[in-house]
Amino acid sequence: MSSSPLLQMNALRVGLPLDGAVRTVVHGADISIPEGAGVALVGESGSGKSLTARSVLGLLPRSARIQGDLLFAGESIPAMKPERLRRFRASDVAMVFQDPRAHMNPARTIGDFLLEGLTTARGVPVAEAITKVTGILREVGIADAERRMRQRPQELSGGLLQRVMIAAALAAEPRLLLADEPTTALDVTTQEEVMAVIAEAREARGLAMLFITHDLELAAAVCDRVVVMYAGMTVEELPADRLRSGAAHPYTRALLASRPAVDDADAELRSIAGRPLSGFEAPDGCAFADRCPRVQDLCRSDRPQPGSTGDGTVACHFPHSFSPEEAGSHA
Ligand SMILES: Nc1ncnc2c1ncn2[C@@H]1O[C@H](COP(=O)(O)OP(=O)(O)OP(=O)(O)O)[C@@H](O)[C@H]1O
Ligand SMILES: [Mg+2]
Image (cartoon, rainbow, N blue to C red; front, side, top):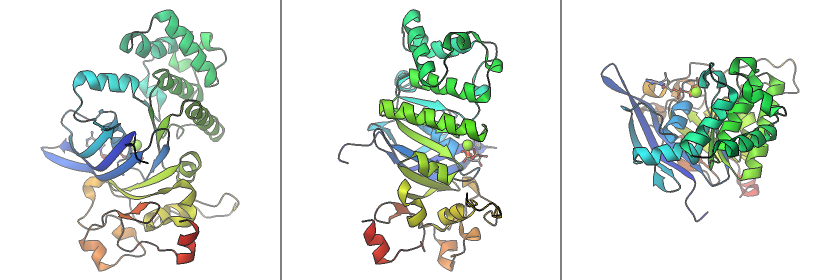
């Protein structure tokens, strides 16, 4: 734990210009990813997950205002000069998106898509690039790689296309993979296969990952640590294996409770009462106050700041606490 993490985000704020004003959509994101580790970022729609990931890639609009620390292996991403940012995107970090089709040109072949980054951004000779890409396609479960490379995106299923996206990401030999809801658009069986492909590729390469999802249980299953985001702020961070037993933020607990038990076929699909807020709508106090069963006056006036829980952090004035016995057993 002595060397600096691969990715370090401290009190990150992101403001986007809108109608002549600046809309703060992320205000207080704290995420740390050690080399090789998997960290999940979970939260409802509009909470700022994708913007947080895009800020890591330096993919925000030019006019975006970024404050706080955003460091890759100790180097500030917002301070990168254009040439360094280009190399950073081509070889240090890669992103897999929810909808691969939206990120591929329908007029070009899968082969063009896969080879482009290697041959243009990295200067790898074409023959070498083809060998490399074919090998990676096999690794992600595409056996007839040569035939697939001649096809166009519309000839492939969503699951196959997502494997192609993953192959493209891996071809860059990044140290950090950003996966923004990579399986949300797929059916359940395909989701599981794609998650397995990602897990195997990470294992083989010691690849770190920021995994964005709505699904807390999936997050905990594939990552080492879980970060929960609400209205543009990270409100809890904890080890994945402590999610069920150690979640201290009422929002994290509400998210867990809103997921029907797998073994209970009659379970009513409960959702958290009230509407999720986006960062720019967050009030002065705690953004979760209006939906929180534990709310008190203090929550409406003072925004809680992150504090240590021992093995994680929570930003809440009245977090769930655990008996010394429970806490002790996990110390
Ligand atoms: N270019 C933009 N300009 C202004 N506001 C934006 C822009 N992009 C996103 N937003 C707003 O920022 C907030 C966070 O968006 P973001 O896409 O990061 O949410 P998310 O957590 O990824 O949601 P989802 O789960 O639906 O993907 C939203 O309220 C969104 O409307
Ligand atoms: Mg998103």
